[in-house]
Image (tube, rainbow, N blue to C red):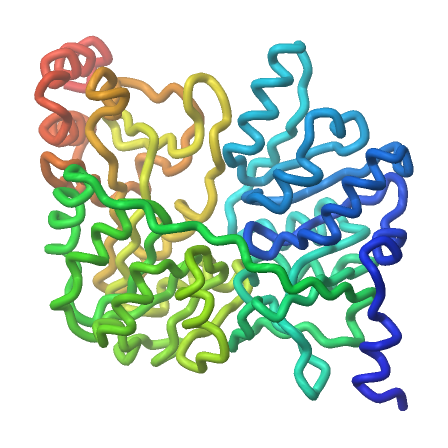
Length: 439
C-alpha cells in the first residue's frame, strides 16, 4: 500500500500541469471567497488568453480578488460562461460592461444557500472542482479551512478535484476533512489569504444594534451576517452571558465575543460548546483564531443552514439585512434598481430556522432610508423578487424601532411598519396603504 507522503508527492504538480485536467466544456466549480485558488485561477486565465479553451462553464459563489484579478475579465467571457449563485461587485461591474454592449455576460442561478450543495452536485453535475485547502496532516487529511459551504459535497461528486494547498489556510475541526485519496492533483501556493476588513458601524447601525440587543437573552444562539450592522450588534453584547454561535458565517465581531468570554456555547442543544459556521470571512486575526481551535467547528452549508438543524437549539436569534420591505412584510434582499444585486443567500434558511427554535426570533434589520434619506426602504410594493415571504417575517427593525409582525393582520402590519419608517415618508406610505386597500 502506497504511503500517505508518496501519494502526496505523486499528485503534487505545477499549476500549469494541474490545469490540464480541466477539459473543454467542463462544468467547473471553484471555492467561495477566501478559498478561491489564486495560482490555479491565474493559470486558467493564461490558458484562456492563449486560446487553449473554447468553452468552460463556471459555477461559483461570492467572488473576491483572486477571481476578479484573473478569470473574471470581460474579454474572457466568450470562453468562460459565468453561472453565479451570489453576485458581488465583480459581477455587477461585468454586467454593466455587458449592458453597454447589449450583451448578457453573467447568468444568475437562484437558490437558497442550504440548497446549493445538492443543486451543484445533483441537478447540475460538476466535472471539476478547485479550491484552496489547509496543509495535509500525517494521516492524509486536508481541511476546507475558511470555506466548507458547498466544498465538501461538490468535492465528492465532481469527477476531478484539484486543490491548492496554502500554509496560511487555517486547519479547522468539524466535518471539514478531505483525504489525499479523493484528490487528483495538488498545487502548493503559500500566499496571504484574502482579507475582508470589518466595516465600521455608523450612528444608524448603532441605534439598530442597541434595539436588537435588548431582545437577545442570555444563553441565546446567534446567527448574523457580515457588514457594519452585525459588528454594531456584537459591540452591544459584551455584558451578555453564555451566548452561542450557529451561523453560516463567523466574523471578527463574533471572535471578539468569544475572546471576551461572552460566547461559551454551553447552552446549545447540538454542537454543545462549539461555535459552528460554514464559511469564515474577515481578517488575519480571525483566520489565526479558528486555526486548530477545537472550540470552533465548520460544517457543510446543507447542515448549518438547514432550518430543522437550526431549530434544534433554543433561543436562536437570527439577524439579516434587506434592501426593502413592503407594507405587508415581504422582503426583497437581493434586487436593486431593476437588477439582481446579490442573492437570497441563507436569509430564508435562518428566518425559518429561528422561528422554529424554542424561544427563537428572527430580525430583518434595515436603515429606514437610502440615498442620503431620499428613498424610503419601507415601500408600498417591492421592486424585485421576494427573498423572505411576508408569512415568514418576524421582527423588523429600523433606527426608529422594532415591530413583531407575527399575528398581525395586513392593516396592522402596514401601520406598524409605517410607524418605524422615516417620518418624512410616513404620510405618503399611509396614502399608498389606503390606495392599495391595506388600511
